[in-house]
Image (cartoon, rainbow, N blue to C red; front, top):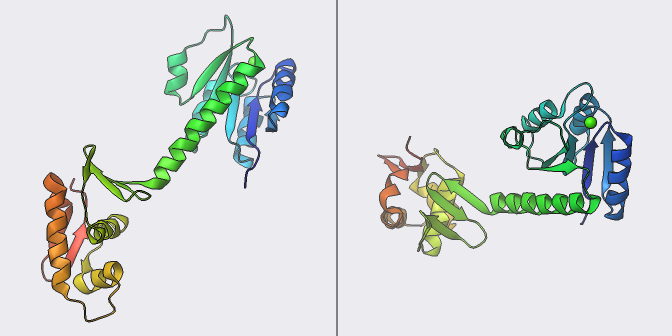
Length: 228
Ligand code: CA
């Protein structure tokens, strides 16, 4: 279900807010607004917004502090607004975690374009983190079932992949052979525990220099742990 983009405007100048609101309404953005830094932070905590447009010179709490506070708990994209002639250090802004900045006076169209670009980037980041599982130097793509190490694809059989995936999603837990047979092969019983051993051996070989990620716990079974 497609929902409207929620934008939080934190800006004390009414004229600026009105200008942005007209542009945002055209885009069907849902608008939240705050007239000072303190109200802006409160609103941020209470509303789940997709993006924050943040003025730097603000009453109560300045934009730098608001930016830093938001970053303590969120990766939401932040665009800083800065007035021409205002002392502005863009490196400082990026260090605080801002994603972009725009100098006043700006065209609302330009601001909307920047917002859309940031939202696309944020979307891609989220999708990537959903699809990818990083275990030390090993990257597992859940969708393509591709495993890469140092940007090289590791060719795994179906069962080797499932075995690695099971270990990777349950790190540091020791599994005995029967448990692995059940979880990865789906055998309730009658499975040959040696099947597990041969697959672990093959998998380790294919992990190359990272074969020590999977360790044998003598007399018990195996676990995956990224060595320190
Ligand atoms: Ca201001």
